[in-house]
Length: 191
Image (cartoon, rainbow, N blue to C red; front, side):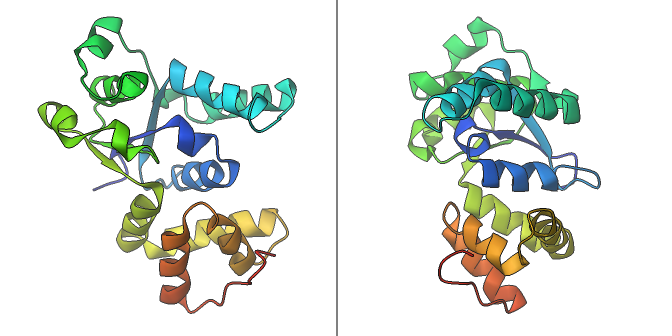
């Protein structure tokens, strides 16, 4: 795996602000992977932000503009004929089509059941839970992962341990793995 390894980040990963922030920070130069998405993924993120999460339209629009500006190479256009050729869960066929069209071998998602192995195999695509992919990135370049986490924590006026405790709400196995590896004691309340 190298810094040009293309990875589709599903909407469920991008809609979680803390997780999205960490993943996209790891995709900044010097990047550990190259993110990939399509228009529908970003639209779904915005619907989740403004609907389920209660973000104001302006904040959601600013998030999207910042993401598209920072990662213009991530956007992939997917043809309906390719979506129709995918056999995974109907709701997430566009995500698999994005991986195929975007030459991504991996989809990072919480919805693993929407991507059964038999639907992915013909396309040489795999799925991975966000926590598992973060553990993989840590094993490949621990220094960058820890430095980026410390950078985000500093920007949020938190200790790295506090920020990792917040991430533990979404990716507990990664947080436990990292805390043990670096000898951090995570605060019980997250802050």
